[in-house]
Image 1 (tube, rainbow, N blue to C red):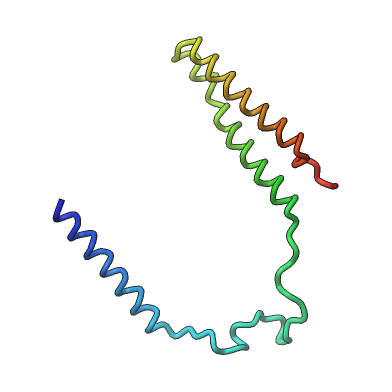
Image 2 (cartoon, rainbow, N blue to C red):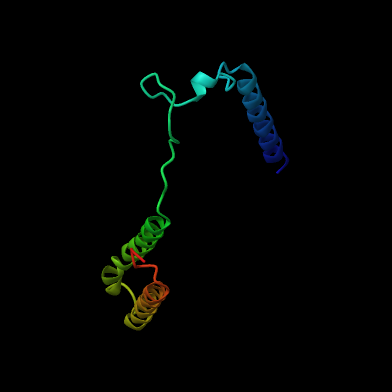
Length: 117
């Protein structure tokens, strides 16, 4: 146990020292205005490089990812039916599907699935 603590302490100490040295020795400086600004054919940028982002699109993308992962969890269920107890398999499958349907209903009821309002 003591050897593990010594090794962990040495590892943290060495990495901290290396990070501090790398920061001090690095040649990159953020003081130069020209180098830190975006390059647009030699001209100064006229607008911000950031474009407005639709939060509705982000919400739909997150919902898609959640349901995509749930579908990936549903795919192996028929394969596991042959190697498990039928009653427990049915109970778990129906519980999972009911949770999915309740989640879909909640998102639909809240209006999260409507693209334009």
